[in-house]
Length: 268
Image (cartoon, rainbow, N blue to C red; front, side, top):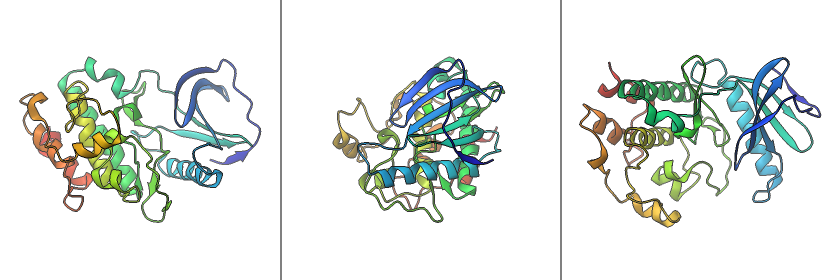
């Protein structure tokens, strides 16, 4: 795959299907194939041009490094022009894990958690911390598998260091150490976020350390003092222990993703 610095011509029949802080996502046709097109502006007002462009380069490099795994969205091409970067990937039209978790049964939820773990394991095997694990970032493909998306907050833990005091990712899924100090960025932040995700889908949208939606960042910071609220969890063998292992507050004791995959909750 090559990155081309060209003026991007919009594919025919483009339709807006998503938007966020990163930019816009369209469905459209590219080289005769129906695809997803993520459009990111190179300049952002809240960050210096050099810093944001560097993060886009990191996103491109890290995503390309992970191509080929069945639980990671396949990236076809990256196109740069003077104003925007376009990430052209497979299109998933069945929704995100957030869209579907209330419609599926227990065994399917558990299998999806295992697929999430496998995608994270592959990231970590390639020295990449995703940095934004959450239900919205897993899409259901036509092949029936979940695909991990959005590598905008990712870093290669072997040689990336942005040196910025900027939080990237989703506050509700951040570890205590990363939330307090953005440069505390390592692979085990994905394990913590996996625990939040797991609690979220098995309790229909609740969060383990929060009783109410947070009003601000201080509310999230205070929530790290709380214990996991197990009152929402059903009496499912090993589920509480699985979530507790992921949500170990001491990062030096938090298990790696390989140990999480070997947990009794996922052995079936």
